[in-house]
Length: 64
Image (tube, rainbow, N blue to C red; front, side):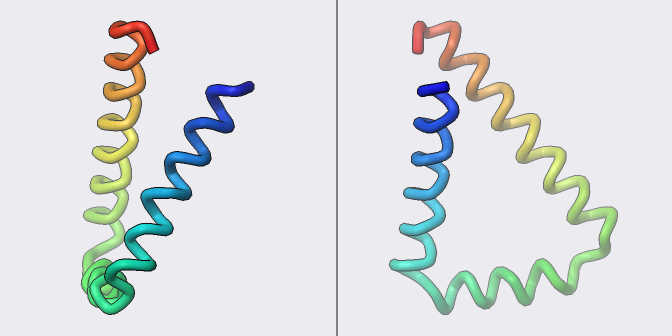
């Protein structure tokens, strides 16, 4: 359970930093995402999901 809370906390830190440091850039990014086709957004999401799983797996291999 502590790993889930740690992961959630880290995600919130990264997300919060993005919104705090560059709110106008986030708005531009959201506009650009809106213009992408649904299939492209789905592929980006799957790529991020796969990258996240690979990073977690690698971290576990290193002993995290």
